[in-house]
Image (cartoon, rainbow, N blue to C red; front, side, top):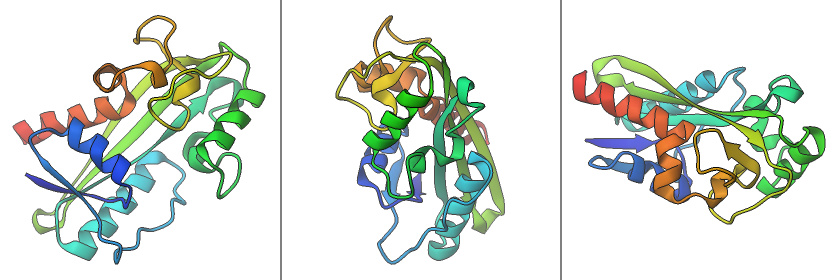
Length: 190
């Protein structure tokens, strides 16, 4: 099945292509503009992007919105994870801010909302994946992106950050891996 991923990010497309093996995953053309992520929840943002992609192209579309919540910060950065240190902040700047504001060892949770929109058949579905962990005292690892170098997953290899895991190890426990497996299960039975 061909699925249009509502993003212009090739890195994200490769990750979803790996997670959705057996399905063709394509990204949007540069002529399609996505709505700003102004929702109050990950689900609102994901659904807005999937609807925009499906409306612009007429194709079955998927979109995700994901981020990290720190218990010590009352759930921040949450839906502002990509903009935590400012509107145009880099992954490194966002991570540095989290490390300054949350204590090492405090509880974290990655959350992924994944939207599926098929306008031709009038179908919209939401899938969610979560991954619990803790904040590392310092960053480690070169894999992954975003907050991965400081995220110690509960179900990962002891003492390794998400950035130190192989793609296969990360996919098995990650929030995005769990959300895509829920989508795949639904596609098989739905």
